Image 1 (cartoon, rainbow, N blue to C red):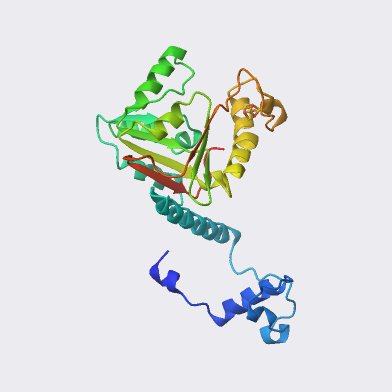
Image 2 (cartoon, protein in one colour):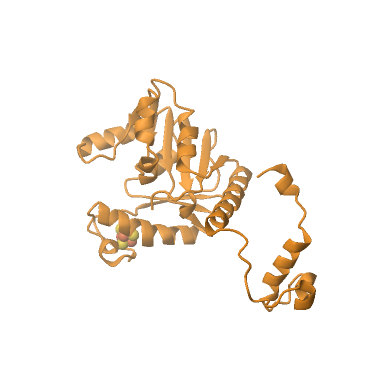
Length: 267
Ligand code: SF4
């Protein structure tokens, strides 16, 4: 958003438009211009919307506003933070930190796969540490996850982000929340706006009732949410929700950047 836009004064037409919107509600807290008559507003019907832009433009503007708000909140919470409308821009930003020979740990993430980061890191000469492959044996997976804890750069998505800039994650093995909390020399978390929740509870609700059922179905994990489409807080041996992490601030002495993405990624 440019400085001009930040400082912009509303035009009379915009105020009238807002007044029309407010006038459609019955509230004691309406601003004075909401009391203007329809004659003063020069409108025939206060309940009719003026469609002043396309739905795509409105959606893009909404994402920009929310994305910038999250960056502000994250920075208030001491995180480094950036906003990009697209996953490609976020991937390019993360890649700018990759140097040949660097070890790059990845938290298992569909979001990171969708923006092609695994391949891009290889092309940039980085040495990716990826444990989420069906061709790797269980003992090898654990070994890769241990190496991720001391890698040069750890890149992960986040299961959730609250409106006040806290990161919310749920892990089965705990490798990802461990690496987010301590170990790597630098951490970049890429989180898209479809992971946004108003509170920690809302984020956990979305994770357990949307993300986990999809993940259990995809990974053929025999948990109730796979069949029902919602969480039963199960006692299943295959339960994937075991370690719950809320990150309100970056850990002490960490180099921690959160990249917010407007485009929907993952689930
Ligand atoms: S607790 Fe069990 S049922 Fe609930 S989301 Fe996790 S795995 Fe699924």
